[in-house]
Length: 359
Ligand code: IPM
Ligand code: MG
Image (cartoon, rainbow, N blue to C red):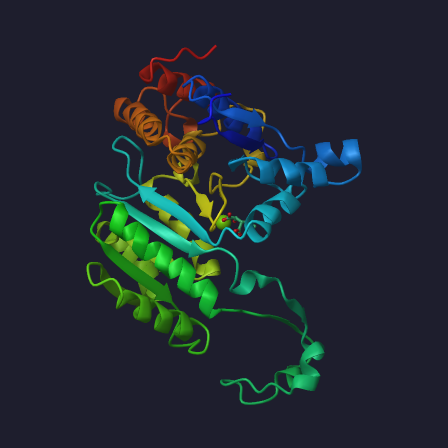
């Protein structure tokens, strides 16, 4: 291995997910960047072998790799996903929304859509504290709107939403730095429900304003999240980098994928201080598993983000250009994009543009 060689841990995921991860890895391998691939066993396969769905040896393989390429998980590989997020503290989930000419979008004028959602990836309702309302009785919490102790509402459940200063500062700063470097409109939009949730989302906005004042070269604006959802659909070209708490980011990034065609196009990368991992934003597509027709675009574009992160910027640009040119030509698109090509045909067409032969 040369000194510059990188190691990527690959978790192929469940259902139709391996059908896109395997050819994507093969394609990148053929680009001869000297990447060393390792395969931590997780999920059902790991359980059968070791009795655990996320054995220590797999965790160590993730730790020892420079990054992880993760397929989609349907549950049994969930522990490894949680480790990649909370264990590795990958706090910024970056989800680009880019219109590729030739893709089939439901919009009449999708041209020029090029924005990035930066989703806080670890807090908000995702801290995972939920339970029966009765547990809250000793706290005697009075709801601001309902004006009575919430345990008096009778049988029910609660979930806790957490917005911390550190968690918000780091993701908002990440969004401003991204706006500086990505060569877009140099605009950061923050979105949250600060009117209804002043203590939590209002805090997120307060911190966004503080950080915005440290970036006078970047335009800053904010919208309440419901208003934002409408603007994102009506005028998507207006946006550049949009930062938001976790749950809104989960929902709106799928919505954004719909603007440019489908979830099959939505790339995603989760970045922390000293680790990042990459995964398509879509799920495992169990309805089409085994048919070989899942759209590999989201995985290939996530792989572009991964190559960029690993320091292979030129290769990332070439791969992205090749995918874009497959759309521009329009002859090798998968059924979700109104084509008839298989996953492997799409990948082979991409490879051909890179001067690579896929077996
Ligand atoms: C995503 C997914 C995950 C999330 C699930 C699988 C836990 O929807 O990456 O967007 O909610 O973050
Ligand atoms: Mg999601």
